[in-house]
Image 1 (spheres, one colour):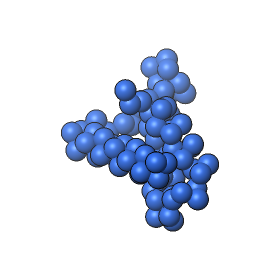
Image 2: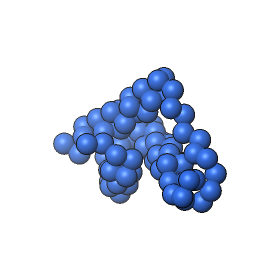
Image 3: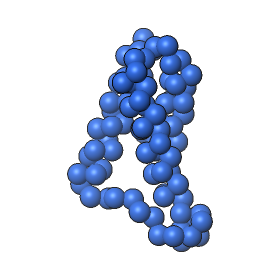
Image 4: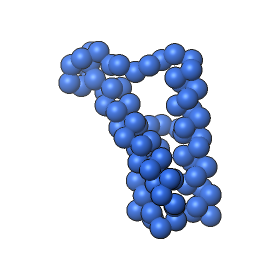
Length: 83
């Protein structure tokens, strides 16, 4: 089962082996890591679960599909290079 925390851990482990990836893949992994950290922070904000403000997570169908596509692409990149 996919979770934000799991994908963050996968990306961090992949970036420890940066010699397996070309420059474009490393840039994409780092961008994905940054976006996931923002998502995780937003999920833990507000209503007694964090620092205060209302979360700013975009829950539209296109946004959620984009998140899912990025997760699949990241996992495929990690799997392809590790194998």
